[in-house]
Image 1 (cartoon, rainbow, N blue to C red):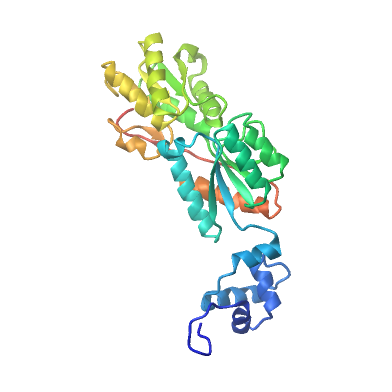
Image 2: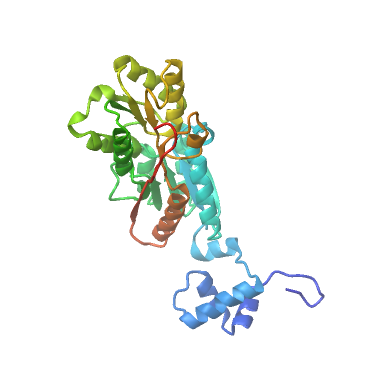
Length: 338
């Protein structure tokens, strides 16, 4: 908008009120949540905001509401995994986009060590963010206790083991996905299906293994189970362990695409053809799967939807609503490895 001397100036609440034909108080109430405003007045104010190009001053709003108007993406893993594991970058990108659509800045925090956890806890306790998107929480992770102790609104990515009734979460259907992948391998004629799990203190590790066991039923054999930590190297080592223990295996369900990449290296080194000798299935469909040789059959996690739902549920908790939980389906993506 132009001032009297012709210079462009930033639109104000007064401008919005004049265009909408309402009081400045009504405009303020719409901007700060819309309480005690009629539907007609709200519509008029929202149209006036669009017409004038008005943007609220975030500092002034925070003084009125007592909120920071920002949220945190908190990764409770070592820093290097943010760049090595593509699932975290996909979640970060999706969450940042979903928050930006609500004009909500996203703060990235990493708490993979005891020192980082102390620093992050102090930052959060000081009220620098309105809530936390908790990524990759392990059972017994002290960060969860800190968040609850300070009554910080939190939504977890994945089922928060041990806190299911206290913290909202958004999760892919890990159990169903594990069952579907294992059944797919069985349906291709494989009979000795092994698995490489994620950490057994994470929901993915626990629930995907449960799905694997459900699909196998009485054919479940603990000798065909090895454990990894979602890293490429752990997949390589776990696959070597399985081949030494059960050289007759003819398929393996790996709980992440990154671990599956490591498992493929071991199989190729051992002279096992994929999928002719050993079929390989992964979990994530994070971008790694399609680039492997051969391209990896995997379970698709809807990262963009997971991120968007996490942001939505978190802002509901910030507004005082009860925590909610959403479990999303994981479709099977068939490629050349199985």
